[in-house]
Image 1 (tube, helix red, strand yellow):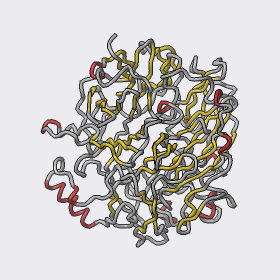
Image 2: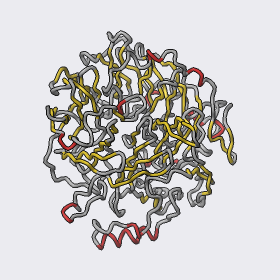
Image 3: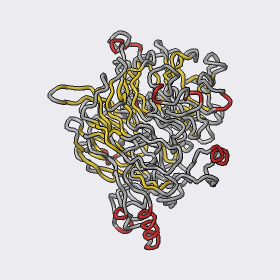
Image 4: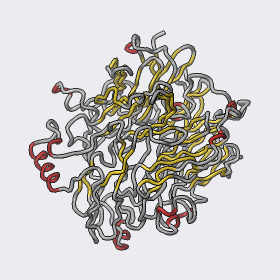
Length: 631
């Protein structure tokens, strides 16, 4: 069946073919059988859980962790892989390096890779282990290198590369397609999304699978459907020829046993004006479940209809099992920029708790603008990020009296009718804004106990569209041409991460057996407030940290305060912190080698600037840093 309709909208489609996910063939899923407790995939495994079953490091000894080795050139934003006693990571200068997992000693370095996607790699090996490859994107090319040497595998694609701009119903020379995130390997397929740019002329955001050996395209799921395909009626006629986005630039998760890939998607483009793309715009802002072998849609749910707020879904959907109505249910839970966690039956797509359509503001002064009259709101669980921002929420600590009064006046004058307030030519307030809620690297989970962990950003946005004739001075892509054509653009993101009272950044633990928040606390501290004895504020900048959950009941989290924080997963009690010598971004990794359990973290980001930035150095290790218990 193609879907069911609620208040005139198709919100979910259940496809045939779930029976494909049988036990047959599981032995060859993801190449050869994985050794336990490696970090073979971005985010730890195909399911993106960031869960490690290792128990050597536990609540009684975690404070004893010591630096085991460092690699000075390790580059931040990256999630290192650890396979067969080798660490693969990105080094300064745009290279891939292979390091000894026990010592950090360099084994090989690739040539410089221009335009290297900065957040991760994919690893694949053949069933007999003789072929081992690393996959990454650079300059819109999907590339394969030999994991033993770092040299291009010339039999993949054309001389080791596949042009991701081809096959999109557009002139390849006119579009951008490369995501900074690496996609997923499933069996002998590599499944990738895209970052299509944010402007009117962006490419459609197809999700595609390529053969890992040859680079041949195996399947493609069109997130902006062609005429006649399911969902095309939610766009203007032939929208695929002119409208871009609805892309998966974020993290993918795979249920290997069932052969289902869960794909979060972003908004249609342009992000903040949708008059030329009237309709609900499937499959933008959706969670789409696809048959990982064929790309066939199994079900979907759209979290924002006709997005004009840049409320992308991009965090890894988390797969766990809960007890619900007395039965064990396999579920998928996706956190979003909206600040909500959306929870579904993993197989059918049915919401575990009702998600209801509620009226939202539709009054607009923008000519040609289109707005959806309703939006979906989960009734449970409660949101992990704040849903409103008023003058009463201004920061009592950081702002000077003059700054506080200036922001007070701006907020009082701005339109402020909730998170779906339409953007107009005068300022509007959104909370969480387009850089709030969750983002890449923000989620983790325990595969069997129903716990899901979410890093959330309480970041308000104050934003407006430019009036005809105005030109945005910064980040302007075709701004003059766009305005001349009559399509509005914005005056910038207008986000202010520390004008809000703390906590700015939170770590939330959900118990999805009950749908309740088990605990929530500020993740990290505002370094400017520590001298005043004010703690628990959460980090003061929107740096994307990461999580690891362990079988011993620990949650490791990196934060913008240049520390690794370790929490008891049961109650959120902070058990330990480890200082870093510089800012960190991206996800940590964890593995076992030679009877030791190692934690890997990068601490080499450029010193931050702008709101919430504190450039003073910390005492601690830098580069790629490995911790372990003393021998």
